[in-house]
Image 1 (cartoon, rainbow, N blue to C red):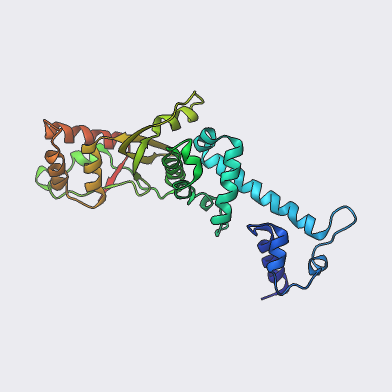
Image 2 (image 1 turned 90 degrees about the vertical axis):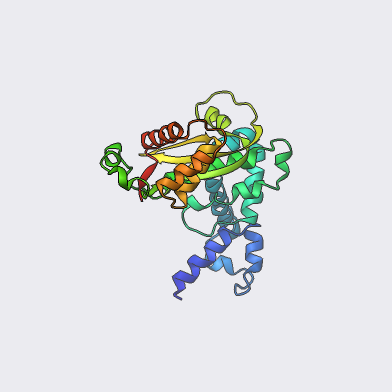
Length: 269
């Protein structure tokens, strides 16, 4: 490894050290006492360690700002101070391992599952899960949406064996709290109220450059699950027909299919 590469690696380890530059220096067994002064120029105003500390603080606050942008509703619910403390603990347990800021929040929802902050906001982990899904769907892969004319061109005899697929970036989340209205209120800069408890599923998908989300009823959730696992159109219809709440399965399937096409949710299997 070149001298420059070693120097870059050392400074990166110090700047990203979870417990701060001082403890990071103590862990550097190959660096002699006072050795940082040979690498970073200090003066009477700031020592070498203090100068590296400035970069370390800048690094933390850049991550904090990125997480505030990715989790605005979680921030609104917890408040600035609690969110700051949350991120501090989170980064100690899940320090970034990738250069891109895209990855830094991928474990936050799971981290919140057992966090004391849930006592005051028991729905916050589900809220963070939806916000993370929005980020992932926005950055996820794309595919040309299936157009209604393409379906009209399919011969009736070929419909039973037809396979559809969801947009590759789409996600379906199983949640215990109805957080979508709270998230929408924060996005629209309206007053929000705490989410109510209720097991359900929520669809998150992208249409063009816009990420959308909505709750699913049981019939649609099961139908989309069938689409996701590669079921034929005949099998999807059987799933809808098996739902006891649908008095007219044919009409229900037609409504779902029309909505999926309007939403740009489907691609050809």
